Length: 308
Image (cartoon, rainbow, N blue to C red; front, side, top):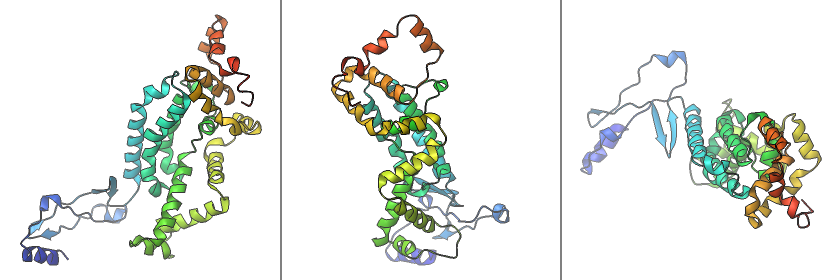
């Protein structure tokens, strides 16, 4: 093949930039191939450099085609994006809906590009999920791990499902879209190999069948909320039993009353079972708890917010 390419280049009086080319031998991560030297390929009589990793459209692939380099890159991107907007999310004077928009646009959007490769396996996205959870805590005004808050309640109020749900929906969307494409991947999607134990197309078909049985998008999100976030949390059960998720549109009031952002933050804390720590209890004993009432929207606007 390389000889034909070289002859074509000579015929058209063209030269190859060998330094811009590279070869990578794909092989399994097995002791049988651990000490085996990669073959050297030549083009126009010059050796082509050998590479251990190839980056295509921003996604790195190593010689084993494992997802570990992709997951590491994703975690770094999400971490950098989160800490770049950390001060914004921790500011209690900023309305909660604005924090949600920034968290979605700058942090969670980084996962969407890699979502078709990650799928619904929560172990693949748990590193990025850890930083997303940190952003949710910051946006809700929780900076102390001893507050014993429920992450399920916070994500429900913000309507931000776990990354496993987002990746599962995007993967199945790509799987169905590529069925009718003109690329070679359409053949792989429509003719799933049965001999191999694990392939992306086989996993996507199984996932697609599961999600179809769940019904609409909201049912799918609820399934992953319960599987990955809720677990056996008592506060999550309290949140669902009181149907707080039906009134999470109280955040729309933040647009009308941005000066009461701190009050809405305390209202959210009350909904997901925020527990006062020692510093808050000390302030309450000193008589400064009235400050909380001043910024509470239900204190002055109860006649406007009876539904909430």
